[in-house]
Image 1: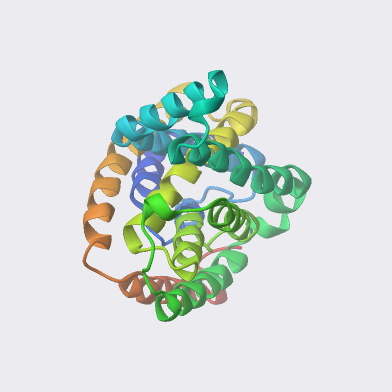
Image 2: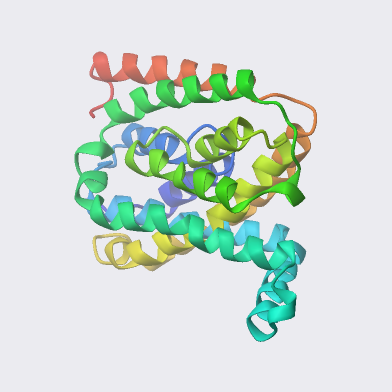
Amino acid sequence: MSAIGVGQAAILGVVEGLTEFLPVSSTGHLKITEGLMGIPVDDKAVVGFTAVIQVGAIAAVLVYFFRDIVRFASAWGRGIANKAERDSHDYKFAWWVIYATIPIVVVGLLAKPLIDGPLASLWVVAGSLIGGSVVMWVAEQMARFKRGEDEITLKDAMIVGSSQILALLFPGFSRSGATISTGLIRDLDRLAATRLSFFLSIPALTGAGLYELKDATGGGVDVISLAVGTLVSFVVAYASIAWLLKFVAKHSFNVFVVYRIIVAILLFSLLGTGVLNA
């Protein structure tokens, strides 16, 4: 494949940073952008590159939620060392995030040939944008917003964590869209569902980025392009996180549903007319 240049990497970093945590599908937008720039979306190195620059977005989560992460990690450490500390919600929550990551890791390893192959198609992205929009709309109708972050349970974490599989198998579905919607269906309030989605993203996306690093650097993408894409992703993602947390406090996600449908229709049109190749 042709190497991803520094300029292209910067553009992809912007797209990743803007869309990773918004419920619009970062993978879908990256694949569309790659297609418009003539980059083969199903190339192994390209798939690896997109996974690696996600680490920049995850770094933004680590910085933004640093105090929360320290609180959870400290509670987890105290609980490991002292049985009397294991009743705290923070200690349990730290374990729940770990447990809730296991399903996506197992499916990701088992289904990797499909994820990197047939499921990487832009036709799948277009269909998944529609499918994810339906789920998000249904979640808005079902949501009761009864419970906050302190009332999250192991069952909540496992169900919400497992919903990440939808985005893994169907690029365009949106990991954040799936997790936040599932949290709303579980009667979490918007802020609790969104924050849970952020915390679950840390092990899942960091692991994916590290796992794909060898493919990204070994298939025509140089280290400078990777570094630029990752840095740009970090800066833009940090701003996106701050904006989203303010947005969810007062607004529904219906604006994202409408946006996703418009993008899906546009993508179907571009594919159908041959402007883009699947």
